Image 1 (tube, rainbow, N blue to C red):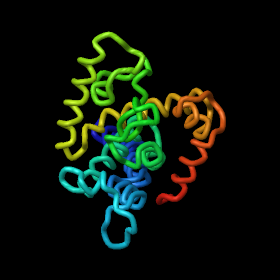
Image 2 (image 1 turned 30 degrees about the vertical axis):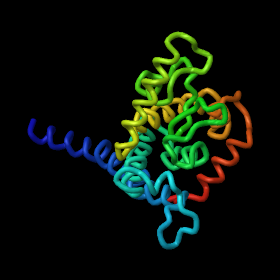
Image 3 (image 1 turned 180 degrees about the vertical axis):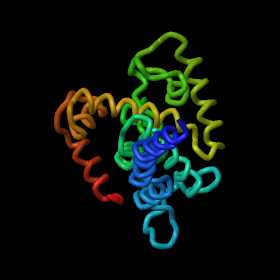
Length: 213
């Protein structure tokens, strides 16, 4: 019985523990993703030509904020089966990694520019980005609540972006599964149907410029 248990333990280590360890080594680490984010923006430090005011003014400093973002991207990417460097490219294209940026219609919010009019946006995301512009019920009260919440988030290193990144990763994974390819899924994430788009091309081009390892 003892020998049988030892054999089972060895098999478990070989087929479960070892592959998990290899997978963790293959996956982008938080440090690597953080370096990729640093490479995407300019922070005013030596070697960067254009300062990024939004990151330079971040609570705790730009490095701390990007480290928090990198942690969210890696964890959410692993949770939903999405490349965190692809999510990084999306965040850069969506907001230049400014959590307080607003979209063209002044409704989308967060580093992933989530549309508040999507019916599946969870409360912890909606409180940051605010109500859908077409909503009338308690609109002023909810907009004030969102403004006050974002003001509090300005004093947090991660700027309350964890649920926003996680929702974006889940949404992208769903779009890719539904559309059948990453490019087509990116188009759907951006608000279109499945297919090719300039948005998908730009995001994938940015992704290809990041660390491929």
